[in-house]
Length: 414
Image 1: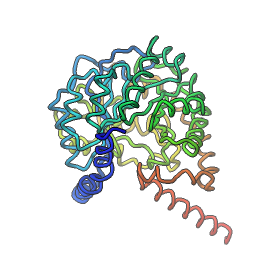
Image 2: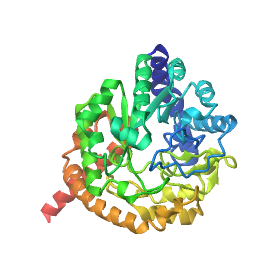
Image 3: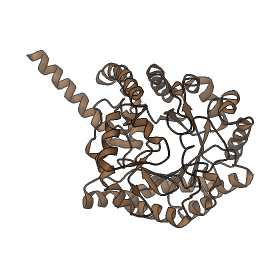
Image 4: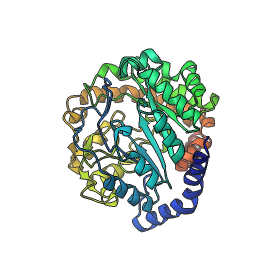
């Protein structure tokens, strides 16, 4: 790792959260009665140099970008609350002109950047190494065949070169993989993970394809059985590989359920609209008109918070595909509007498909919850990772386990 990367990650991810941001979070909770989100996702531009099929962000309006001043204000307000981790997404973040200026001004926090990687040339890699507070996560679909099929011929070669540049300069980086019905099994294979470990990744993110954005295609969405397979494989890979792996849809156990709705994060898009989730394209508030605190306390976001927990089974965390009634109720109660043309389809025309998916996956997930968690089969993987991500999840599960044992004893007594 480069000298700057070592210094920034130690200071911004370990020291300052305890000495500065932790006390701020505690003070905010004591004053306002609710927890501060752990992170904020900002998509300052929806422009992109690629044209990938199934892109969740494709339908957003692309004329408007957030300016430097607005993003600077968002981050400043968030830091005052005690937030020290920011995700920059899009669109393609490396297209947004003020990106490096924002990273440099706010050098006391960590930025994770979701990028297609094709614009990380020598100059950009040098800047990331110099700044030290940047963690790029590069989108991949598999190897060359799978990646180029979705992202365009030659893309894999470009992102492979980008990874080499980052590794050679000592930048911490990772991959981001979208699971579809076609690549679900491959992206959790030993072959896939080992390849990217050899390329130098430190972290890998998995996302389930959701039928939103560009030409929503239900046939791309992994089946309930495939999702469950991926869930178990990620656990196995975490136990056997020297890399941090996380699945946005399958790791509810580690995060105490869904992160969205301002509970642990929210998403601010390029026109200022504030969404509860990167994949939940509805908004009732705009950050250009309100402070971050006002957004968190708005009727739309409070509609999500009041309904927590969405499901006692933490393997079924999502309001979009696991508990779709929650999303529909929150949109109605909060007076939210679609943030781009067609985004309402997830709660209208696609609702019957989503309901059936939720039912089928629910049957699988409930069985897994009983067999793997209530009976403690997979507790061994709830180690240091969940404490880092959210210690409350482990403590909540411990209480559930104790309650289940107590009920078993009482049943035997009766």
